[in-house]
Image (cartoon, rainbow, N blue to C red; front, side, top):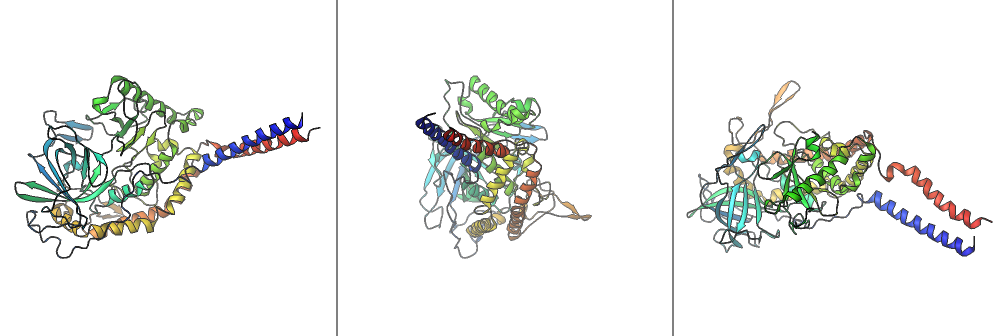
Length: 536
């Protein structure tokens, strides 16, 4: 072999080794060193409420606003052309829709949001638009304090987009004021934290809502004006559907059966791996065709076939089908906050054309942080590893190792006591006067411990050392303290619990599971050119 050929071989082998090494490092460190990719960050700080005087001074005994009412929060005024009907109910077996009831009522929405944080209905509004409005929710549909779904319209009743509180232009908005969460902050701190970590998390703004009837304003309480999860350039940014094609990008949700979405009969459901339903959120009903629904059903089923496979060789292919980093972050966000509805209910997933399936955005934390109606949430345990898809993924040592390394990284910045407690304190100071009005408005529910009010949210009692312990709480500061205690205990124990979870894995995939083999390959690749060059 000539010297030139030897040098060429050495060069080629060296380049191959370099490419292999870079790929290996990137492959194994991708999650750990992942940069924040959020398309939107919340305000760095919420300004403290500087209001002076009695927060209830300008509300009468019937919750009517009196002249002089001012709030440091933005104001949302709703004028509704009639009563909002109940159009569905839920039973243990499913959803019943009253087909003869139109859930939508026309109306008008007016927003006030001044730079000086002194907002009054006598000010110049920043937005006045027509709307359609209906009640929304599942369990919350029966609460005394309603939640609303708002669709902005033009004067002809057609959908119309507007930028509300700087969250981007869209026609679909949610007013979330869950009575389940007496603290009023659970959704906000979870979404704000997730926005720092995940590709996209729902944006929201605190506000106070008033219902205008004739010339009077009825106070409704503290709400979050929120984005509805949907396909959009400023929300779930996947490609638009082309009805001429059979294939399409899609957004789906795992949840209970509903008559308002197209429900899929996927591989997981047909073979009883998945107790829930997969509903199509995008393409929207107007853009759905028989071909693209069939495509989504088949494409999602293909992913399920891999994840549910008992054949280890088939299962190990899951990395080709799902975006692992999104699954890691989704697991950790929901586990950290103890949101154990996730994975089974309100679980969104989306897939852009030609890409892997991503899970998210995160959604619905009002029953998180030890606020489950049924039981106390033990901060010294994990639960997300038992949820659909994650039960399968957590068999794999590589996936659990990614959970461990990513959590260790997030724990140093976003998921530690200092960061979270600072955000909680900042938020409660911002809500100082508004939460007084909220608890005054809904006192009949927040101070009721009798379990006899059908429009309230009750936390079940539990047994401890043979004694029945009530979980009822009628003190706001205690509610905030309870949240902090849960997050602190759970956050400190998660690394240990993830290590224990790693010890229970039964499958090894990826490069980490073959370290010895690849080290042998690297050594061999170095030795071969050396042997060739020195060969006589």
